[in-house]
Length: 215
Image 1 (cartoon, rainbow, N blue to C red):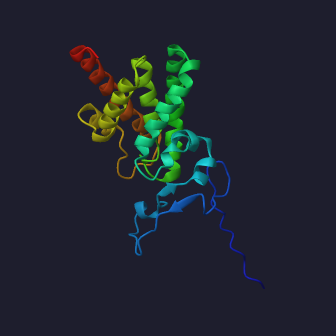
Image 2: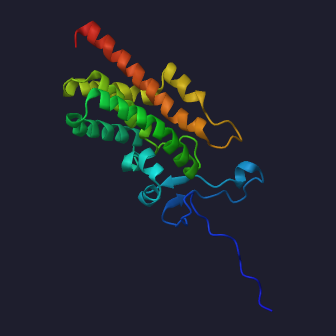
Image 3: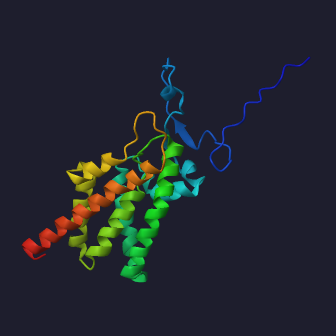
């Protein structure tokens, strides 16, 4: 009698497509992982272009590829937001920009949640949709300003987003994944929230600069 074949199902992503080895780089597991629930979970993944292309949520969350940058993805994502704003500005009114940002926030909660789940990390650095929405909001509210004003807005936003002073740090910790908690919508909201607060801090700083120096 022949031995039964291995009937273990092939791993698939959430749309039912088989996961290919080149879609993600799997982190190496330790030689002797502790037998607890955390050790049994899938190892975190580092996103690649192939990984991004296989699900629409990943397109959005990874900033249409800008989040794949191996260096400073948050800064690259913000630069992508700046460039896309300049290109789209002649075609969109302020009201249309605000509508786009509002819709992008709602869709972004879904996209960031799903991508974080796929990567196995609650707040992956490669997710830059939060930077995109936040910087769009800043530019929408401060325009029209020249290149110098836009550059100042960029520098201030990157400072508040990276250093996370005061309210930004509070917002960043509000929806942190607790030990043993599965990645869910709370983390998707949290990914976006701290950058929106950083955007608010940037707008306050710019308003103070204009009031004080008459910029």
